[in-house]
Image (cartoon, rainbow, N blue to C red; front, side, top):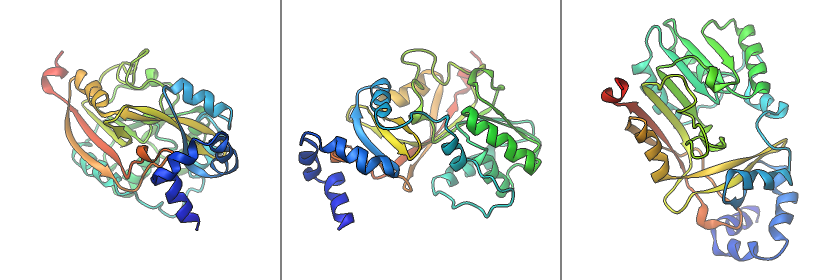
Length: 283
């Protein structure tokens, strides 16, 4: 019965009708959504609108001790975490691109999750630098973890503008949470780094051809705005900085369903590899 009701609210026109009943969405948000991990709620026209709505329902933002505990492993000898299908595409390309002296800028890399995955698959045998930029609570735990692991090639910071120059940029599940990643109101991600990297990997992105929107995602202890990007605007941002699309893949392990809005269901997310064109690198 639970799965039937979920399908009705998430994926059928019934959900749209129920969502128009005064008070029902708010009741759902407080009694169901706020007590679950990872669900989505509501449609909003901007990051700020979504943030205001989230404030009424939960603590807002990623700089949260509870989130940091989830994202950063604490045991130095934990069993390998389950591998996500879309990570193979990134690993395959990194196996070709990483070389001695490389610097990887890992935006939203938590406690070095992907660094540890690359270590598991023996991709970091050569000397290089891996720098993670994330929230202060997460960075604090990441530093402690890698001190315990005696990791020698990973560093952490909280300010993208102070990150080292890199040849490879990773955004493996973070860009949809950023307030202004495409530089529409101020500096975007690529305007905030000292030098543009030659290679950019973006994973777990929600794209739409039907008008971009924001929703809210809940993590029990906190909630945060989450963006469905306009596909055209998303691609144009990287192209305008001299990048061409080198590869793309689907992310079947993640889907997005928003209660009372079945028209916004995404059965999977997407991932991209952008390479800066040689003529752009000389400019």
